[in-house]
Length: 313
Image (cartoon, rainbow, N blue to C red; front, side, top):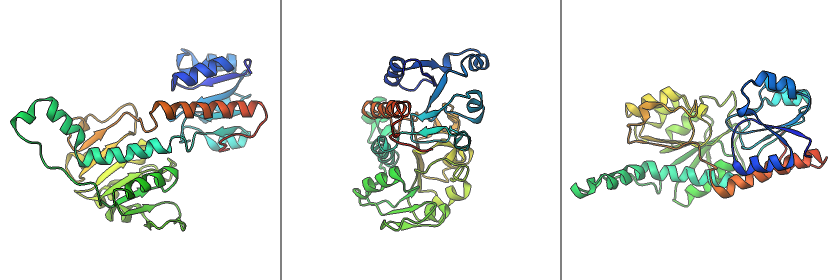
């Protein structure tokens, strides 16, 4: 398979990059100065694209690669891939579900604790020497808080199970009611937000879920409510969230994702009611290796005419 051209859309994982280089003819797209000329030169040799949550395969790239057979995403999300165009051209698409579920769910709980118990602020309080001058302020209890989840898929369910261990009542909103679960269903996100203390975004990013958390939802969550986003940045109307946090119309937020990554609104940097992370939901050594192995396994299965491990299209 060494002669098969694989285009890696952006830097994502050293182990994955190393293994792709060993097994295929690897092209690192981010290192190409003139992308248009490169695509014209290599359009007939590139048969696979590897992308992630930052860069994938849009319609323009797909059209530029007439021999493209498969797009393998080093991510569970597919919003950077033009799925309709892939279906139209018979291009296979895979992602990395399940292997990152536990890490993302763990981080969601960590963000809840960090925001409510002000863990980051407490750490800074000790480091700055302020503890010598007096005890830190009282914070907010997590156990028993009402947790509302937008999107009760693999990750949403994993978050719910973890939150239940903290005696948190669980409710949710999704496209359809899940009859197999005992959790309370709300037909709208506004109703969900109005009936929870912590609102978690855990759905896929589509045109329908873009800005699913808007001003109405934020206002429904209220001055004591906390927003946790481990989904995608564009799920949230970011300017509305920033103003709500600055004006204290919302209690706090734990954010692993942002609308224009890696750009983060500077207004958030000085706030003590928000915890900011650099999109590290699946960022453990163990999980990133498992994700890389899944990408490699899907590519090898495709080119050996075997069933794909995690097919999407």
